Image 1 (cartoon, one colour):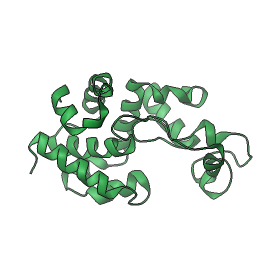
Image 2 (cartoon, one colour):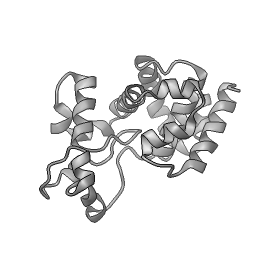
Image 3 (tube, helix red, strand yellow):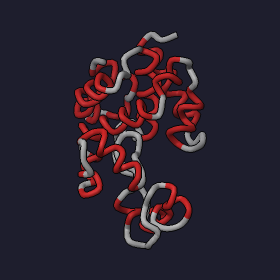
Length: 183
């Protein structure tokens, strides 16, 4: 992936494209996102999730993030049941918004072989780890295989839990496919 191709796909990324290009190329190589179909689908999804590389941390007030702190969603994410700040601490980070203690731990073990992301969750805001965590999530959730079969809405559901932002994701996918000459 060249910087020019990247900027064609993400025209709103501006200078962020130059900051992320090397890390994204490395992460895609490390996690077998290695065909034009896979790359196009991956870039479309991270493009939407990060608003074209502008955000590597989930936006939201303390009140919004409290949904991750207590209750059923918090429990599903592996956060403690007490109102102790897990919602804020393990908010979505990285280019595919790794969310919740359980996901941070799994990601940390895959990337570092230890639990350092539980102690330093902000690492997922750094370009290298924002990209690596997204590519890890992609590969570990079987999204390469879905991309090979053009199952883009299924990919969206696995990332988002629903179809939020589907129109934007589809537009980014069409742009990525055009740039990469994917039919």
